Image (cartoon, each protein chain N blue to C red):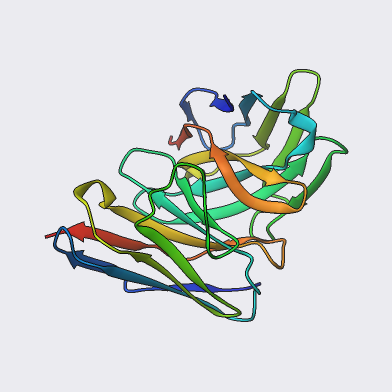
Length: 120
Length: 108
């Protein structure tokens, strides 16, 4: 059974840094893209970026490039989403999701989400 | 960036009725389109990929069609469990992949 288990909810202050995780199991981690999707309160889905753990190919939405860093550690089947300097506007639910394959870029499986709250 | 536009924003349908959701791309995405269902408090769930291929476990009452710039998701006989927000996503020309704004399906 494929599982993507995300790290728990975070409460941070503006200006702080944060790294959330997505631990994968039940499939070959290196063979599927892991994407990150933001959902602000009451809003729709926004694609942030993705990584192919097999070769660490990483791609970002222009809206998020420079604002976040996507990474992965294939030794522990875990992908990460990182902020260097959080803003209140980063408060949202963040989902990781697994693609169907290298050239199959729909998202077959999703993590449960990590709620990030940034408030002074 | 390809912009995905979904309509209507909200639709209210009685159980057993047919409902059709639309998704339009600002430029051709061929058949590289997926549909997701999201219920309150849950992560999205893949319904359809390749515009018309049902994901594993998706009931046959869900059908996807279209190619190029115009796509539809049809629920042939709406059930109460289908109350959710539905999103389309293109994965033809990326980054970025882009989602539509969603259509909320309400049960009358």
